[in-house]
Image 1 (tube, rainbow, N blue to C red):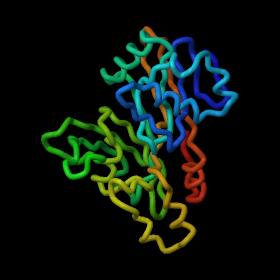
Image 2 (image 1 turned 120 degrees about the horizontal axis):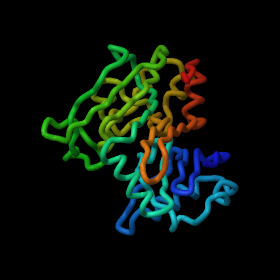
Image 3 (image 1 turned 180 degrees about the vertical axis):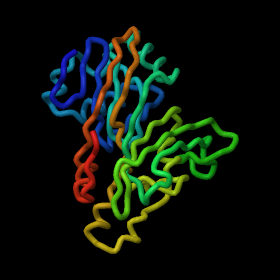
Length: 243
């Protein structure tokens, strides 16, 4: 394996990229080619030159929401793509996210086990639904400030918007996630703090993927550094991200 400058990892079977917030991985009828092109276009020129082929030779393994940053995998061949997709679908891939949420969850760690289904009144959203698909998320408080807490989130399932909906339903909306609760910063009196807690995207980051051994390669742990917009808010709040 070869460690790259701004990419996370490269092998002869797959590539791991730290997706920037704002990059859409939505796919249409033509498949994932356009999403791969957008992802590669977000990289610097030197990183794009280090890739072995263009977007037509790469296959998107999984997706993150447009506002979510962090680890994304691209397979170099159909066989590797099938093996990695199978590992995700069979829940053999362990995922760790970090999120900045409003308030202080009590208890400081636990499990949210609420089924999810589409919001029939707003097709952009998901909602809690007793007849929906089972959805489980584990959370742990990493640090607290006067207004917000930094959480480690470990989803067992991979439902659409799962972590965002679970956080909101628990009463701890992800900072910047206006889709699931609207701005909360109005209750913050300090103007500078209010501005810091008003990002233009949810502060949710796919920090780590633990891949099992598959025909695409050996067991691997991947980590993605926080983007500057997220880490800048943490510095302002004097929150250190634990190792």
